[in-house]
Length: 175
Image (spheres, rainbow, N blue to C red):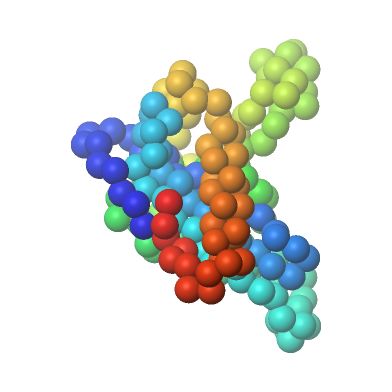
């Protein structure tokens, strides 16, 4: 785990997950300040889905892996509590039941500018509201494209996965 401290600053946690193959999940959590600078990073080791889990969990398997195995585990590792958690997949909607933190899903707008949304621009949908969610997002987007930190997480996951492929004892908290 890597931590960089900046006092008295809002912190935004970006939570992302991807599948390395149909049976293998990996998640990452990047906490940034309003300038987009990293404060803390964690990622999971690859989590493999067994056939028994597919059978027993049925349609709830994806929600279980994203929320219970990835999101809750990564949030528990944080040394600094974020002011907002942004997620990259709707499968993280269940996170709202596991945290008091505000949670929002970052989505790409496909609507016309009639509603004030620009095609291709990233917007967010509140999953669990918080007192300052809109204000934090507005401040953040002055310096950072809303979805860009997800790219950093996924790149870090790919980099870490290369290490896991060559070193079975790799530390999943390294940044």
